[in-house]
Length: 433
Image (cartoon, rainbow, N blue to C red; front, side, top):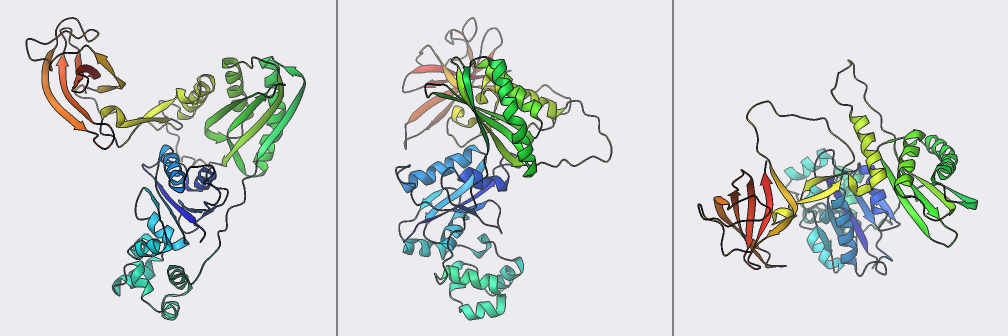
């Protein structure tokens, strides 16, 4: 029996995830056949056939999808099963990865799912609730003809899907249109300025074609090929999609200045990244703002173009037991208006190190009045202000046992340190400023 996968995703926090219409594009990296559910944005079915040669197994493939969506700021349920309704019901009941071993296992699990998890009309759902029909199993106990007569074709179709009486083949979206141009250079060109002029020749017609399709450019990919078969790829993205050639050319100029071709370029490939056109709501009254967010985002675009995509990031909370694993660095695209706190008492901020810095080994945490010297942490012996606070765990992966404490140096630095019982070494985890 053919396999089928369902992905149900939602933003972890408002404004931090791609739009629902971008989900098929993200999933297109994992399957050529992706069908979005029209009634529920953020839900798609995928065809997993042929993915095992590319991934070790179906669980590995589903796990890769889950990690990709998590990196994009989406909480997702990924289920690999056998039927549309079974995978849909189970994908909408939790956030994680599940691979079902048999159709019987899928049916047994789907029967327990609440009908409220499915995209049903509110009126029909309320009527079913009043009759005590709350799960997929309860719906299957009803005769199909009675469902059609009382609730109409939509619920009747769902009843047939749940009972295995109706199998609808996957209707994937057509492959996205590529806005791409290639140019062969004869003789090969090594000057960055003249290469920029060639990029400008390709960019103008591409932007006009993109505008005619009702799309905007979210960035571009530039490929430089030499006459020996080698190539260098440069991905340049915009914080806000648009159709202004000057912004894109400026990013290309900065990248070519930061990373010169090195060898003569024999061929150029330019591809625009299409995105929906964003309509801005005009304000009735002009509001004076201290900072121009659009100008700041353009400045960050230039920083990324010159230093690389990883140069502009922000911290995002993550599920981790250790302090350094409680956040991830993710790309920063959009800026939000500042929300400064009201003036008042000075707020202390604990700044964590991305990776704890090792300090000399001592037999125990410092005690008041007789603390050890910590080179690099301040001149003189430190004094323990609070602690120790024990943090232990990791028996399922790699066990750890740490004794945290707050330490004050003679020059007034307030440090957050811990002693690792395994290595018997002190580490600097952060400081308060």
